Image (cartoon, rainbow, N blue to C red; front, side, top):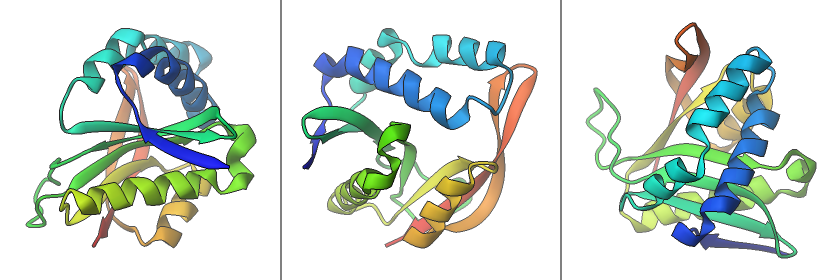
Length: 171
């Protein structure tokens, strides 16, 4: 059974754990271990999650499989795409599922839940970045209706950036 709920500040520790594990599973081979470890220690801290959870337009959803938290999403309402007349639009900043649950369609359920929430917030679309080497995620987003509209270099450290596709889906 899959359930999804909006995260609150009391979920800081849970999001820190899920965020760290899922980021390393998804991007751990995109840079050296030292770079990945330093990035995670800076960006996936309880303090960072607590701060993000208090920003009104940044929403986290946690997905459960049989009462076990197995992933989360982060969407930012009204995060308008530069140089686009399409407004308001949301940015899907994270959609992560623990690797052992990939084949259970939990990511699809969380994605659909998050997209429906964006529609309820009267967003006209969703945009995101996805690492060019994350072929599984790229196929997932293309199948869902996203189109590649640009590129972006995601800085993991001052000396390392990962090339990303910029994707857009309109409603």
